[in-house]
Length: 499
Image (cartoon, rainbow, N blue to C red):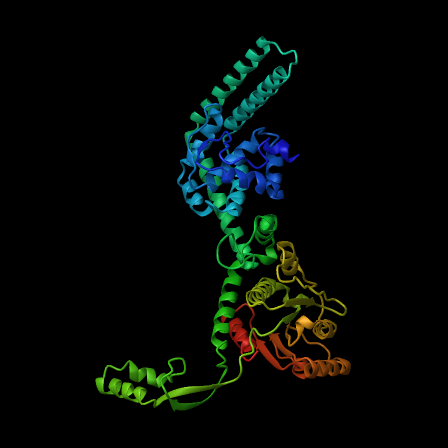
């Protein structure tokens, strides 16, 4: 079926071999990428399948779009044997939006493939109706001519008169298609502009989704994504765009992740708790605020006095205590998905992704356990290299029922107890509800694991205080407004300090 969409040029090419194309290019690498990798992607096949009924040459149209975006050396030249495709791509390649998009996609197989899909759909769908009909008629005539010529070459009884009639019809429909495009220059330009702009916007959205889910993009920094993840990235981007419950996820993730990163940097030096002032040698990280005033003073005597004390090792410094435990071991995120937290699921999803990305970047094992009412919990263990489908399932998941935390917490303890890779794990427990006091068996099990293996359990309580959490947590952090950036930052600070 794929061959029906994309023709005979799906096998890798010999270097130096050229395919008929509207582009002048010195290399065939882009064709190799198209044939060897891109056409295997489901969303590309779906695009071709949806369009092949109207455009028999959709494979060539999509291939040329990909090559034009991917190959930095590709220059538009047109095809003598296909003047309609030449005119069609001229409108695309002359637009400013095309050149701006190409700056982002050249050499980027993932970006070029995604943009190709959108341009093929948007550009062809938005052509003026008379142009679309004329192009389709020309393609039908050309396909009939090619098929009949192939039959004649194979020795079937096809007369020269029949071939001449088909050739004449093909030339007539070709001229009609060219005339239709020539009669609608403004509409053709608008179609090109709209399609490339839509591809540009969707490409940006997909890149943001890939980065948000820790997949990275191409050769950019972070976890590099591969073409094999592209179908999943497209699904992620589409799900975020269409799911009302996740609207704003990428923007929310931006400031949540920025907060988490800045807080991690603040606490990673081991300076957790300020205890007192002391005098000592110059250390700008611990220098007391008043000493900075002396350093910046306009009065020369005060400023020189500071320098003299700095030389003598007698400046006022802040003293901190506390060991750096952040990022040392794996952690389990046990989080509440009761009905009351559902309005904040976007921020919850951002927190999940932020923690998961931090774990992957630091080489820490990450396990998520969403829970709700009695018996409602599920363990997500995505491993070191989760697929887009796994990540999408994680952020979509929620029970949105009641609140009963002890079975999922027991599940977290069992994972830590039985899995050697989870030694010295941390548990971050998030809830916004009241629940029963912890069972004695749970407390005994927790105490034993703390003693035998080593465990830190921090509870993040939203909107309220929770006396039950005090009974089993090493530390309880409160965030009164989850939808407020300041409150979330304070919560993150309290969670990460000393943990």
